[in-house]
Image 1 (cartoon, one colour):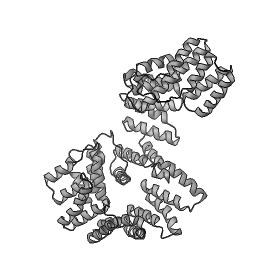
Image 2: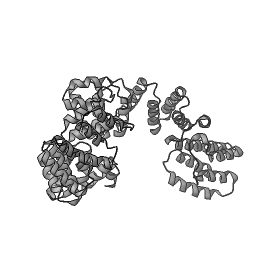
Image 3: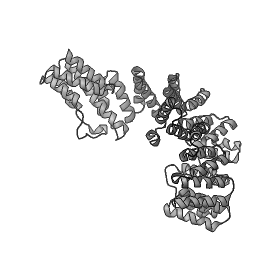
Image 4: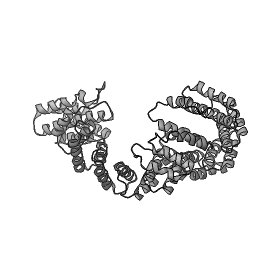
Length: 507
């Protein structure tokens, strides 16, 4: 359950499945699986799980609330209303259940009933945002514009930038001034996502006309194919997809469960490969990896879009499938100008310890993308593992790393390279140069983009220094290094260095 709360869905699913193997009727695990199936858009599987809970206890409030959500998603509104009715008996689910019943009434154009349930929801939670939104829509659809403004003003009082409230004010009075006011308050990085969220919220409440009205205002300017997809889907007009076919798939990452159904519709009504690709991405985002890979595999080598092959390679790696190398090569062939694609391929070969291949690719990237510290650091890693320590240090001394995720690795490589050099020097009998290299490994150069911590881990360096200076006996070294070996086992180049140091001292 903690994994579920922290959105570690694959981990949670694995644990729930393990529990259910031993105890098929475990209440918590079944509810957890139903929750995961709902999030991933697999509603029938979710109902199958939650039905077992309800067979054991038909009055379980949490199970009824989950069942209501699943029934609603499947369009079974009578069953959904009944399930929410049972869930509303609990104070924990009362306000939320009444809100759901209000929204179901909206879908069925029962506006007076929608208002009644919305007021009941607000009786138990006066700050229930969804209930206020539903009440505003019901009043507007009933023609009570003045009454509709009351919940909207409450929403704006709670959140002055509340986009739904400002959009509803536009629907109440569709003037240019009100539209400009609504649009003018959206200043986030991804305004298209705000519009999509609103359109889908209207669709979920049976207000497709309002959703279409919003999306049509965006058609002339939007370069997001998912916006065009929803516009076509809500109009049930596949011809409208042709405009979206011409839009680049760059930075298009569908992830909402509601979008899955629209993408399935698009793949059935349009032959462009992008819709299959978007559907695969959406399923991947919902941890339906095998289905996503099957869709990507169905495209073969038809698309001329490099990131698709990187995505497919990543899925194949995750699922333990073959054909990764050919996809990586294809992605580089299609996008030789993309350092990100080349870097992704290098990371794959490094992770799987194919160092010769990793070195060849990182060298090519290093030659073509000068002064890109991400590429330089990855090439330095290839050089280190290929035993080209001096070249690795030359790269690390010249690179300028901005504080970032790569910064930690850059300093780590710097330490490992000097320690590798020091061990080689000790073997060659160059004690003074070895001491100099060990001391250098303790430095924290500014160009590597990471500051020195208060107490850095310098145990390997100190052991090697004591060894070359002969200040403690070999047995003490072995005890210290063996303990360190157990602690650092499997942790990158540290393990290699510790084993080298152990061999050196034992000799």
